[in-house]
Image (cartoon, rainbow, N blue to C red):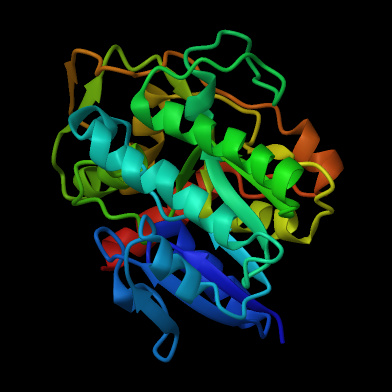
Amino acid sequence: MTRYLVTGGCGFIGSHLVDSLLADGCEVRVLDDLSTGRRENVPDGTDVIVGDVADRDTVEAAMDGVDGVFHLAAIASVQKSVEDWTGTHRVNQTGAINVFDCARPGAGNAASVVYVSSAAVYGDNPDIPLSEEASLAPLTAYGADKLGCELHAAVARRAHGVPVAGVRFFNIYGPRQDPASPYSGVISIFVNRISRGQGITIFGDGEQTRDFVYVADAVRFLRAAMDAPKAEPTVYNACSGRQISINRLASLIGEIAGRPPEITYEDSRPGDIRYSAGDPSLARSGLGVQVEIPIEEGLRQTFDSLVAV
């Protein structure tokens, strides 16, 4: 039986990954500080260690005896990285280094590592769709930390022999994304408010675009990266290659809810990117995976799951 550690496994994306691994008969351990994740997101009986990924001893203990690590634990919020630069850096970059360090051959916990990076590493790059070879110029501390994780992953592979691969998430959405959090994804917030007949706020003019990926597809990217050869510390875009404006997104959710959204526009926030869409070619050729769930279907499933709560 293959044994995996999922850091951040009680969170939105991590818990869906845990479900997928368990469904395939894998043994799964979770490390999560429960700051945003919820214990009830994973099945009863799951081995959950409540702890801090930025604490090396905790990571070393959590990795004991595992064959692979999916490193998802992070403060995944651009806004939070603006408000708490030092705190987010500690979790997002030091946590990743701890995982890479403990996975080194000879460190006692040798394991393959798949870690999550972000489209935030590209910054406001107009070269759409963005390939993995596009220039990297993050605009926020969050993006800078994710780029730092990629650089440390390359060191882990080339200097220490750690089998490692990165997945650059674009905008992931789906069930279990907490709409009550001010740092949550735009889709869960919009679905929650529009379904209740409440108004929504769009920062900027709403014509900014994003590349949205349903969480089940995100899990498929992660698992394909774990199964792929890791001779080099390759990083793959997890994206659809399609742009949708925030205005159009609000309209689609309104159609599903059966009511047009009431929209208030406010100034753009620091670090907001105008246009974003990724090139999925490398993941398609190198991992054999691509987005399968169209935005309309994913929004419907997200709407049904949130409204049912």
